[in-house]
Length: 476
Image (tube, helix red, strand yellow):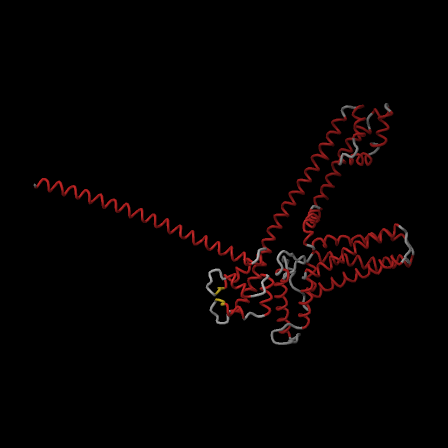
């Protein structure tokens, strides 16, 4: 079947592009996959390793890969897998509850859960196998596929090896290893990603994942700060001479500041200000200068450090949101280009006379496949209604630009095509009125010039007439 297509990430596939508002989670491009199929088929034919089913058709293997790919990119398949993942997570919780109740492995409920667990694992294996069948080894370039491989491997190790080993040996020492089963709950994040109505929740999960690096560095910095303040506290409190003079002071030191690890654990309470008043208040009353030490801890750790971490995480979330907007714009442009290519093909099929325009008679002869696409995009089953809605000027013909742009605007809009027609007509009326206003302004300007010329001529005539009268009076 070839090495598989490039793992080029794209917002959605061909099927999802026909469904506005749905985002595909696989990251596979339908156009990319189709081009790869055609290239792979040409390579097979050139090498003499494939047999044509018919002229211009794909081989049986590639056709099967195409069908599998279409299933994988279907939102119905995503919803089904998401439901399986959710049920699997619920079963894990029920199984844990049964273990708390010390139910026997022979209990019919426990056996039912065990059978369900095997079924879930088989579903995950089949899903992963479908991805490798459709896209080949190159599909591992997708991070979610890598994650699925890890989870399936953990499931096989747990269900088919570890549990069998524990059951055979009766050794409970492998119990801690069984915590690997909890890794399946991480697939809930993928379920959130698959369902559009949980988009906000997925944004929170993704924000948590992207801030993992920040949390690691925060933990490291917090350890360094607590270590520094712990060493300082050892010198100021643990080594304080008052330990040997005051039993109350010595009791507090014995409880909270006996050694460096205990001091750091005590200072960890200051991070969340967890009941720290009972720790520092007696010490400050006995040694007032310790107020500088404890105020410094409170200022540096819970106030400054935690707020700086919050600022970094919020800044990262803002940058991620900006990146999402840019990705959405790219996704919208790619979807538009794919749909325009399909609409151009439909227009070419309709333009029988090659005039570059489609008439009412030509659009009534539309093929079934093209008619289904237009119906899915515009929600109108009658092609003539689509034509009438796009033919705003009632010219009886549509050029390719009007045809493609009109249907694309309907596809990305949530309003019916009739409303879009009214919008176009209103815009056309506004344009005509604007042109009329410009013409009126031009006429007023020209008439003003004519009036000035007329006044100038009248003035010249009046001057000439006055001169003529004066000259006639002198002669008389």
